[in-house]
Image (cartoon, rainbow, N blue to C red; front, side, top):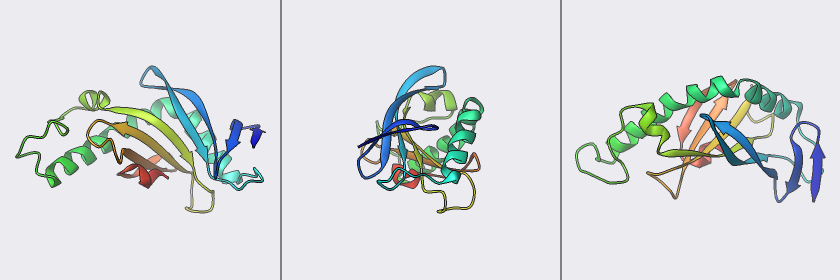
Length: 155
């Protein structure tokens, strides 16, 4: 089933609403999946529209706020796994956000139900070179990174 939503555009329903779309991430046009939680009736919460609109309005500036929390997460994970002592080719030493950018690709944006958290809730999904199975996820609340982890933190 498909729906043409005035805010999200043409969506397809497969247990949630989604579409493939393009977005600029650090100056590169990237194809991503946009996923919106919703029932089969295609009715979305006003909070979902507000969260998505705020994200898109500030997208260029927000991208910059993603990198330091991701770098901190990566360095912590590397330390927890002992790869700061023992070499592992999947977890090289990364000290700058520029190095980090070469290791991640934007994969998707998730707009959860509006009543799960108070505020504008968004999930950001990445593929990453160090954990191809679990990927990387960010949870944003009111356009601030509140959680970094595997992709499931964003879903």
